[in-house]
Image (cartoon, rainbow, N blue to C red):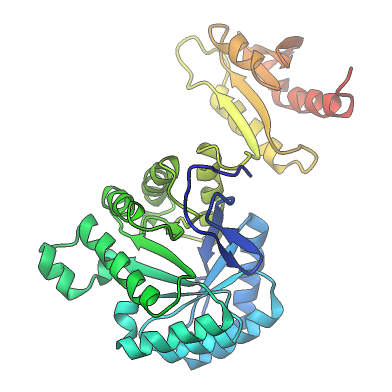
Amino acid sequence: MQVRTMNKTKQVKIRNITIGGGAPIAIQSMCNEDPHDAEALLAQIRRLQSAGCDIVRLTVPDQEALNVFAEVRKQTDMPLVADIHFDYRLAIGAIEAGADKIRINPGNIGSEDRVRAVVEKAKEYNVPIRVGVNSGSLEKDLLEKYGHVCAEALAESALLNTKMIEDMGYDNLVISIKSSDPKMNYDAYMIAAEKTDHPFHVGVTEAGTAHSGKVKSAVGIGALLLAGIGDTIRVSLTADPVEEVIFGRQILEACGLRKPRLDLVACPTCGRTKIDLEALADQVERRLLDDADIPDGLKVSVMGCVVNGPGEAGGSDYGICGGQGEGLIMVRGKVVEKVKEEELCDELLRVIKEDLKHPEE
């Protein structure tokens, strides 16, 4: 993972994960299993961890769920965030149960005294508080002030709630501002980033299905990351949370913020293409990603003709340059053999593995 230098936020520790201040961006997701079922939660946490998740959030809606949260905490080392709404006592209980961070919306926790009670407990345990603001739960006075939900209102809500906690003598904070509108989301973070140095958790809330939600998330999260904003991310999909983690990593890789598992270069095809490049590229990608012997970070090109093929394949570690029902296998810019179309994938993998065993030859 690469360390950024453009981010000027403070650093916050969430169990063994450091965020902010140029630390590697952490990927977060949220369990969607029954919060009263410890075994189901633990199984999902293991799956998320295997997929590359760094931080997991669990909802704690009632006392029974708090008891389950405490049990889960005992059985995993995964950094856990307790998601609390309405009942400040659950936030206090989650901190005592071992939460590594709590997520609250101060506006729905209740009176200032109740927020203060949560802050005092967080201060006692040195647990970060994520101040979360969503477009669907904006304070009434800000809605009246601006007339509608907008980026300015979201940023102001986040900054006012953050200041309230700062005035209580606590600044171990993370800010999240979420909208389902990527442009509004972007604008709100840009406004807030000019006025605070707290780290940001970024994402596009309620982005949608695994198909449409990925588009919104790629635009919304990617734009912020390229602008230097974002210390943790969550891709919010109506799908298996593991999908969120996998796509979150892909966003980080595309932004140059994590070393890619595989950098696959494939041409979009045209009338010059004389092999089934779409099927070949899919097969190459799948087999390389599924093979535990293939190291991370390889650049592999799968090109369809001689126009750009030799140049692209020549700039990769390994490549295929297609022809008429056949193709060239290339290693670091050199052609090593010509192969029939149906043998290209198998032969490419054989060449890669052989070359990795004898890199000096």
